[in-house]
Length: 222
Image (tube, rainbow, N blue to C red; front, side, top):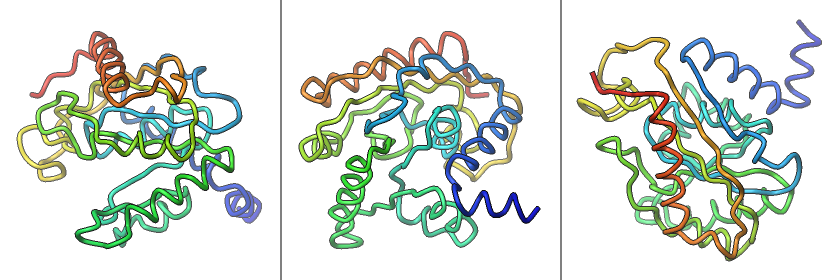
């Protein structure tokens, strides 16, 4: 037990990623495609549609490398989970209206991560989908690439709309869990060079990948 705790303290992110991988396989029937598109080394940004509060766990567990991910500050500050978010290197961000300088600090941390050769994940919609569809991407991705031009890997996630962690039939987390072992699909696409990774192009690519993933997941809001 002591040896296990020592390994976690020395290299927490790979071990936590493997633990999350096992957890999500217990919760869902999963199909992953295109994980090879995440580079074995070097920096990259992964962008994905945002369906539920489980999205980061699914994408992080599917990735062959540990991911840093942007997340809302109120969730990051959760008294029950803040220790975990700190351990995995989550990057909190809030609106400048609520916390002046928050966006700047988050972008600086993203830049440090990319310059250290890490992979950063973000949900460019900036919020959970209110109806299951992919919504317009915000300009944060372009801001990140202007500072650090790295490859962008699109991903489409399907099967979590209708879960209690989505906004289907009411606010997320306000309902009882009703689905177990749902079919969840996550499809990664080929990396897009930073000069071509415009917001509209990446949104269209994520929409296409989600449509393909929907074909297998056949998710419905029951």
